[in-house]
Image (cartoon, rainbow, N blue to C red; front, top):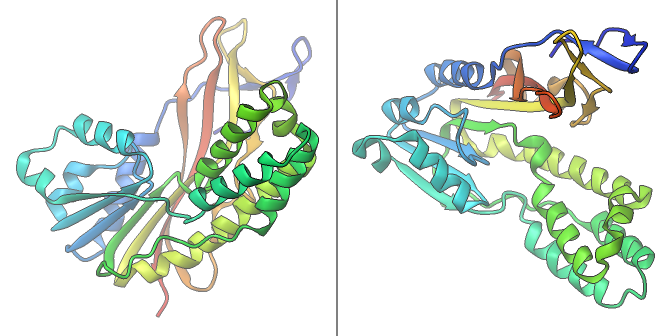
Amino acid sequence: MNDPSQPTPATNAYRITPVADQHVAESARMILAAAAHAGRRRAIVLGAGKCQEIPLAELTAQFKHVLLVDLDRAALDEGLASAALAHESRRKIDVVIADLTGLTDALTRRWREAIAGSPDPHDAIERFSAVADKAQPAMLGTNEYEPFDLLIASCLLSQLHAPAAGRAEQIFVQRFPADIADLRSAPRWVTSLEALARRIETGFMAWLPTLVAPGGRIYVSETVQVCLTELAPDGAWQTAGSYRMTKSLDLADYVDARYKIEERGRWSWVQAVPQPGQSGKLFEVQALTLSVNP
């Protein structure tokens, strides 16, 4: 994504040169490049979702077994249907429906218990935040699986806490429907949720090496920042600014001495093109291919 230039005086918006969507093509390129340096037995896709940027046909051609893991069965089913795989390719794919963080159900129970005793929304926000403060991730157990030659985690890191955050809002709005905006904007809740997200991210990156076979590869990508775009009068794009989605604007900051960076990538993901009267959405994606140090 282009860095914003100076704000335009009339709208106080930053101008952006329109860009092409590179997400599917660049994701597939880097994933298949990582696969070329890995073994040919087993691949796993964590947070697979609809698999829009995952080259399933090519992966099933190269690997004997591909495991897709996600919490959303409907999204996985849609992705598999859209891939239109041949019968032999589909037979190589297994699906596991699971919460990678091991947190969502436990937090759901605790938030329900917390709100049951809340006399008002402000007390509920404090109780919700206190529950989040104590939560620690317990990453999905994979002892039943052999190590994987290729691990793919595409645009997952910043979304790991999202299922739990969504459950919190559902529980809150059932009791205090008129006050959901107060929860979303409460500094206490925002701070607690961000700290929880960072703990989950740290636990996730520490967990990945345990899944990978010697000589294997890990592909990690992330939307490090996003902006809503509007059409300028001259047809250019403009935005009020970008929002950081990760702990820093460099995905490599998540990588420690356990890893070696084999390849880096960076591209634009135009999730929606701005139209007259309709906002667009533009992500900056960064990607890393990693090996695990002995």
